[in-house]
Image 1 (cartoon, rainbow, N blue to C red):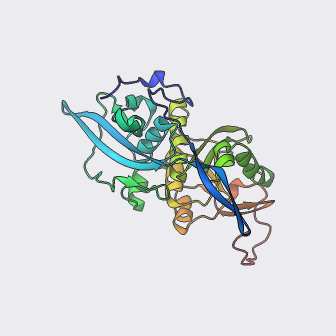
Image 2 (tube, rainbow, N blue to C red):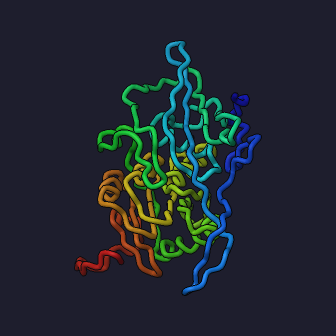
Image 3 (cartoon, rainbow, N blue to C red):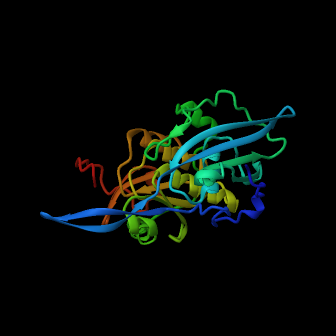
Length: 314
């Protein structure tokens, strides 16, 4: 059984989607035995919820109605529409909000599974090519790569970040982790979620999303921007609570975000991708120290000397 479609105009950017079953359950309580030394006591502990979300796409091809399950990703429930839109955007299936006619939860009503499927109906006349889009179909909360990950595929869907006047001071950069941490509401309860936050050039927080999967948090953030119709990213900065991997840089490149900052380390492929798309990549932001891996000109002050001291982790 499926509920009637919810038009894009009625979803409300940044709001939770309506559902007959409580869909937004980011946390769950469980009983644990808490040990201190040799003694233990029973306590209630709060966990981050992890559940599958199936993303299903419907479109018309030559007058024929078609439908395909694009992916199943393990995610934290909540902001599911943003997640679906951000994922489809990253995959190059849609390019803007108007490419989607409607989207709605469409899972089975029994067993509380209604909210674990999102059906996305593409607008009439949208030309898409689903050939060659055979994916693994399942992504864990730790890995969001879905589909081919060659440099050529990236070049087809992404363009280098524009050379804007965006320049960031070191004070701007080192202040980001504190702003991120203060606003991680669910992480504060559970200690078990990643976060992606988008800031403008003045350091104002635009949106923050949390999820068990860092790639899901990024997709939710990008989906929010699509709903706001503020793509591409322009003079904006995305901040991650953990390490930066290839898929996060791919999503940033696709969204046109020129600066990526993280408290953790980047992978080698993340650095290569950032360099390919003119993205400033900053990692290991700790206290008043950080490393800049690519796009050095966007950080005010620049390198003071050319010596290398081997201090890889800042």
